[in-house]
Image 1 (cartoon, rainbow, N blue to C red):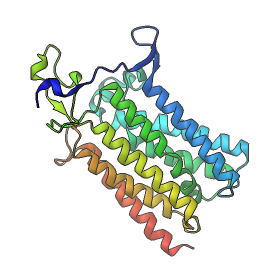
Image 2: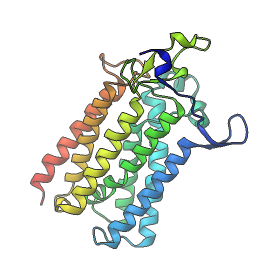
Image 3: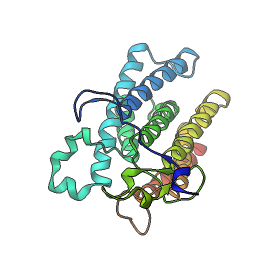
Length: 271
């Protein structure tokens, strides 16, 4: 295929732009919509008997999750993907307008937030985790779509008919004819990590009795996410130095696999 046959990514990361670096970005909008979706799902779970949280407890839980995702995602990126820069210039952690969030860090943030909510509301930590996992996929899906709109985290070079030319993937000044088309891996990940997990977790919660085994749904969620992430990474250009010849997304996903397997095995012994 010739260069003219591929779609060229020229999408604006701003929905509304007021100054060079300030405005309403699709990435921020994705987070906001993801949190709203989580609030709505939690309300449905409580309304139809999957949980017994009061409206005040629901608000407290979602607020804690929001803080956990944002702090965990930002700190995770700073430590897992930009450690050297963070050590030399620690103030970059607060430069959120430059982007930089890590989903694995977000998981850690949610873990801590879940522990805090369970302690404050005197709930079972594992049961609360099972209830909150199905709230996560909409945010992941929207975040990956926002990655695509931003033209970041692009895929590996490819000649498939649906490949996309990301001008940002080449050095400034590179002639257009020399810019390679790439997999739109952000959309692959939106489907694998977002849509797939959303369908599975909702089916598991509503149509099975998984909640009688505390930790089971959380373990399945972690394992499916890890496998989906590893699959998606096969098409994604690494955005940080490799660890043991593995992309960081794959490397960190092995810890999620181990954690998920542990929770599943534990749930089988705990009625």
